[in-house]
Amino acid sequence: DDMADNTCHFGINSTFADGGLEPGHGKDTTRLYFPADQHQFAKCVKSIFPDAGLRFVFSTRSVVPDILDEDGKPFFGGSYEFKSGKDDVIRDVPQGHGYVVSFGETLYRALDAIITLGASGKSVGLINKSTLNVWDDAVMKKLAASQFPLRSSSCPSTSNSSATSSTAKSAASSSTSTKPSSNTNRSTSSTTS
Image (cartoon, rainbow, N blue to C red; front, side, top):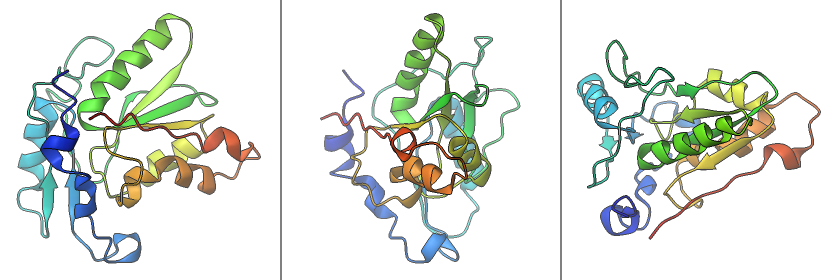
C-alpha cells in the first residue's frame, strides 16, 4: 500500500540521525519526531520550532487516517498539546494487560489491531511514542508493570534510536516484578519495503 514507503523515502534507517552523543542524552538536544497524523504533526512543529538543537520531523509521503479517541473524535485535535519527550496513551488498559508501542504511520495500523482485539474480548493498550529518542519515565513504568510491551514500527529493529529500539527491553529490565523475562522481552518489528 501507499504507507509501505519507509525504505525508499527515508533511506535504510533514518533513526541513525540520533547519534547518542551523551549517555541518556543528558546534554544532547537532538530530537527525532514521528507524528502519527496531520493534527499531531501540526502541533509538533508549532511546539518544537523554537527548541534548541537539531530537530528531525519525519512523515510519510502518503496520507494517513486521523487517530481517533474512543468517542470517535481526533485524539490529537482540540485541546491536545504536543510535549517533546512525552508519550501519548492512545488506549489505556488495567494493570496486568499488555501494551503495543508504536509511532508514525504504523500507529493507525496498531490502533486498528487493538480495536479488533478489543471486539474479541482481548484488552491491549496502545502507546504513541512520537519522540523517538527520549524516554518518558511515566510510560516506561507503565510498560514495566504491564504483562508485555510489544513494539510495532516500520523502522528496522536494529535502529540506533535508544528509546525506540529498546522500549520493550528497557521496560523489562526496569521492572521490579517477578515475571519471567520471556514475557517482557517480546518485541516485533513490522518492517515494510
